[in-house]
Length: 337
Ligand code: ADP
Ligand code: MG
Image (cartoon, rainbow, N blue to C red; front, top):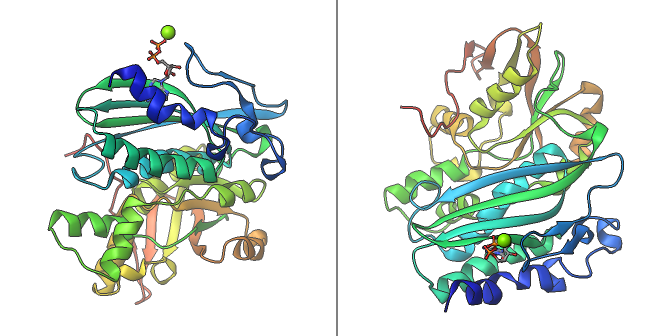
């Protein structure tokens, strides 16, 4: 099989089968937008998309996954396909955007049809759930690497930017943290099992982009970011982006930070530090006015208010003993150390 037959057999259905969110596109469920943006999908030199409606902005983001760096060699292909798209959709979620479509650039060491079937199964079932058709891409031979670019739209005045936090805002996370990074440790050590091992592995391999929540937070959240590099690191990004004439800090309360139940076997301080610094959970971190507290609880039962934004510097954590100390942890950085 050559490159073009591979594209036709595995990737073309993304833009042609209605089940994958392409083709006829718009219907009541996506409010007449979303998948309806694709005028011409895979097969020509470019895909052609309808620009967003007046008053909306186009949201664009890319994320690349490299074997051995972002996922373990031998990871189930369906999980790789799912995650490659999920981490991109998570960026749209963090802006409050609604998906329109995506492109896929992929390097494959060889044509392995079993692998491709699994990969496409994971990727296209997520794409179908969020009506985000594959509209184009590039296919080449090389060490396994996957780069996806997603496009979405968001009402211009309601994009959830990371530079909008203000003193007095409450700080929220949308769900439990630390599970995915624990799964990385377990996998490195070759530890497998049921119960917490399975649920941690699910957090790592099958992250669920918080797209509905992101869109529901339009007009409510002030600043938002998705948690890819760890709570402490990503919160620092929000503080840095939102600090202007006033430098901002975050005061967090240790007992309010939602620790993933699969960390229950760890001593409390170790579990907390994993929840603060472990990456890959893809929950949303956002800030909002205290007056919206009840509305947020009603929107997202798993959301926890973990602290407040104030004038100051860094991240301060108040422990169960009532003592407050600065948090040293930073986020994951591919080029540090
Ligand atoms: P060109 O040479 O014009 O850049 P290609 O030969 O690379 O086009 O690709 C042919 C068509 O197949 C294009 O429409 C391209 O977007 C699409 N395509 C190639 N690889 C992929 C892929 N991995 N996923 C989706 N579409 C792809
Ligand atoms: Mg061309």
